[in-house]
Image (cartoon, rainbow, N blue to C red):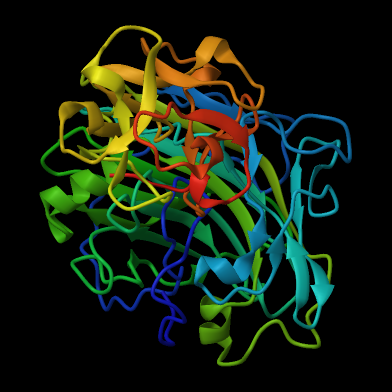
Length: 452
């Protein structure tokens, strides 16, 4: 989305395993707009902080909400997790280090989440949080609305706030929707989608298809609502529309990229992400300089009053899982796969490593918000919901418990939030038929997996 060349071919997101492309300004001369009737005019939040999110518009059902209520100075709640580490690993050229410190991410005690960038020169810290799974999607025949009330940060060149969504799997085919981005405290907004293949492809990656920066008067001085609606009421002519304070300013439709690309990118659940980056290809490209500069002020804060998601059912059922299944390979050695021992569907059947052989016991599917792994109709499961190092991992009926949540990380690990540990090959052995376990996350080959 930047007038300058992308700084890097992709961005490694610490959200469901997706390489993140540079969120750079789109270079579209014109885009076919699809009008989308939204019941938002009266519903949209006024540009001041509210005590709570507004109720769902008529005809919509709430599927996610965080009002960020809590004591001043406390961290994020259990619907979110931190995405920490150097911004340089994201591939966008940003320079900050994302932390879980309350100096960078905290509740302000007044119903807001504050994400603050601190630093000077090339040394900055900031924050990035995402929902613990890809938790919201548009049902076939219905719509998904994701909205937030946000006050953008001041501080000058280099600030890059974002409110966005990401599908599980490999970027960009897994889908990305950037609901709000601005750079350099310009009081502007851009909405963008990413999909297809990188580089180029029908979605113009790594730029994506976007609105470019639009005027957003007062967005640094007050709260404004940023909204995305994914419309699947006509499943052969789906669309995504972006609105500011209830007024649509940009839309993209399925026909622009083709049905197969669109379905792979957007006909499934996605995660919700909030972050405040510093520097990188987008702010640098817009100013024609290197950001942040010596005059960039520390302490700029992105304030979030609420994040909410709503759906209409349309009678089409819940969104399907992302397409595709296949082997999950281990980095402990060549040709080593995650395997359901003996192709059994019995509860508590061991899950092990074994030579890759293409059998049904090794055909895993990433489903249910990109965090649950299925094979032969069963789920990857931690025995008895254990949380201790060395607890064995087996197969069990899918039940939606925390013992079956494995969230792919950018370093290849599969993280279980309930235990705070990662899927692990004991002692990094290459011995076939070794049952896998959970263990303290350490980034070694014993915990690196490649998903289908």
